[in-house]
Length: 85
Image (tube, rainbow, N blue to C red; front, side, top):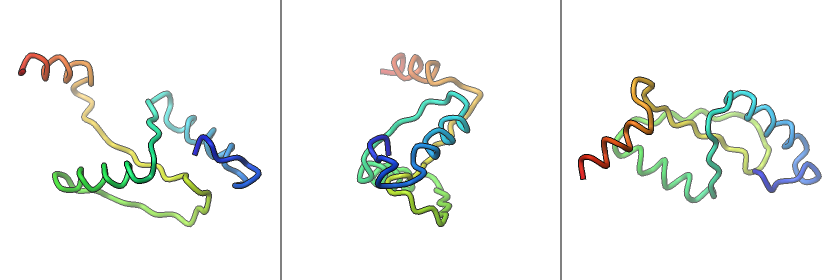
């Protein structure tokens, strides 16, 4: 989506702004569609995945939200994994 211009997809710039604002500073990872689908497929083998579809027609604008637990930070998880090696 970062490369899609408003000339080809009217409203895409505003949509990008809305997403960034809605996520309140959370990290955003952009990846090719094929990688997103592979990640969802892999995750669905271990967890239940909820898919919500809309009627939006802006190309390359899919948003996938991966929820993590908030009682443990990503840094704490990395340190634990490093100690386990």
